[in-house]
Image 1: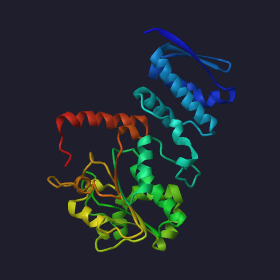
Image 2 (image 1 turned 30 degrees about the vertical axis):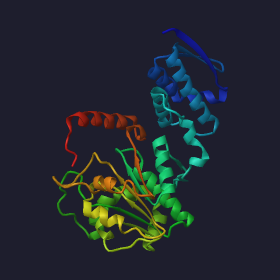
Image 3 (image 1 turned 30 degrees about the horizontal axis):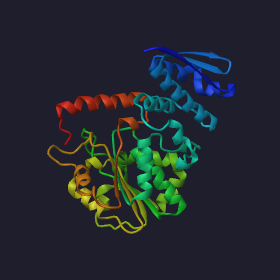
Image 4 (image 1 turned 90 degrees about the horizontal axis):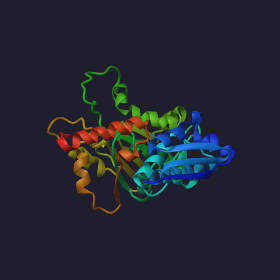
Length: 326
């Protein structure tokens, strides 16, 4: 294929943002598409095979839009833009940086918004349905985005309280008897939920609302016998529920409530031979109006790029061998 050159005009004040610290962004683009670049004044010249140059140009123009919008270009922006261009997917990373995608801000002022188009569909499903199943591997933002939507709905007065729950099952190891009172015993299982609450709304605000009973963090077993009206309910680690537990949870949901069920079907900690309540529920309720099922993939992983590679490596290893995921 013929070697071509393309010139992209970049305003001088945008060059540092697009190139990144020590030119890390442009070097990553150069390596990903096997192109060469030269920067002269306000011109960036790309050289390489035509298809590669076109993809690199797409990524650079995408990053340029993010910079012009005043947003900081993160490693995740760069990686996702490269992924979209490489796979020929529609859309650009910059499309997700608009104000209309904003969910809320963390206590430190960091904006929370979907970072992939899979996450965007997940957030839209939350807005438009009463019960939402969000499945996918670690790092896809299933629980974090659910927490952000729950806190936003609570602050707006759309719901009267937030209820966060997960089954209290050890992750593949027996911890024995834990010391302390009941709350101390269950806290380790619920720590990931606490962490998200602290980051988004702050420890003081969380404690005050928890004392008032407006925010509740509890094991799934505590949901039995209750009817949950006017609440935003998040069931995390749902792959570790049994069939009866999942049925119990789904039938607790009352008027004015919204429930999000999240889980990673590849990481079950149930006893051998026990079927996952999440797996069964996805088959049972998939055709019911008002219930949405969002399947996030390794493309939606927004943690360190190495996490995405690990997830993909395990998917490749487990698929052909048919490993038992219970």
